[in-house]
Length: 388
Ligand SMILES: Cc1ncc(COP(=O)(O)O)c(C=O)c1O
Image (cartoon, rainbow, N blue to C red; front, top):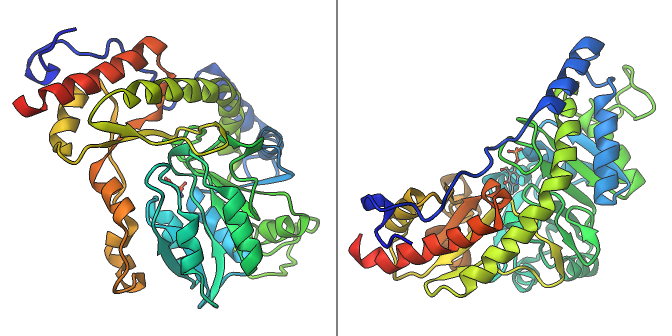
């Protein structure tokens, strides 16, 4: 391998290209043409029920309902579970902002909790400490596709009478102890935004095993109607969170592709973790205990603090690594300041925000040889870091 950095004219450590994202072909085209020709583009068409049935069956959950994005999926779950003004909702400090904003949208207060340094998922010990008499729910986030410690989180919730909404926007198809992400708590939420591993441009879903919760989810997403009465009878102050048939048509085709992609991401993610474990200077995200399939919306690792991240990323990108931008810690966002306690500290999420490296999930659809090349690229850039 050329020891000169690609940044300085050397040859790239990573050969070839990775599949582009999103991936689509004739199947999506056929579905869209069929929907167009049907003339039924709204909620009464056939693609939405076909997708929700297939998605629920894939996850092993009783009900799935599509909504127009993953943010309103969380808002809808909070509304359906009766969470509102003055209630406190525990959320991780390391996530996309939508997880923390959703409680604000129903008048509730997001209470930030730090994450585990190995799995990057919300720390159950810190959840316990954050519970007050006002706490009504916990929103664990299966971050990057790793699954939170759901046994402990559900036990804590049961002990304190709290609801659990699993933000599974990163974790389509992730599996732990025989169950899929999104199916452990009261409601699971998903995003199908275009960067996600299952996508349709913009879209989302809620899933649940509970018939009564499902009826409330349906009603709040469809103008307060009952599921068996679609007319002008409105029982709840619901919203219109419905998607149209075009997104569902794309999702029907994408779900078939997803079923052949997610195990490749998991296997390549495992291989890359093993390879990077042997590299001094980086530590990959640890798979949670009991995890059978990692959802791998992202592949992530921590860069040792002695290296400058911006310089490292620039050199790694030149080697052909699919560098992605990382999240800031939620407590640093201006609009969150009123909800952060004076003495609150978030050492793990702060370190992740400042020193983690993120790679796009389509790189994990590459070959095993490319996983070896990615690890070699990391090694090469680290060894040249002093010379950059
Ligand atoms: C963890 C998490 N939750 C929620 C969302 C919100 O999903 P959407 O962008 O579809 O509203 C995202 C989107 O990236 C996310 O990453």
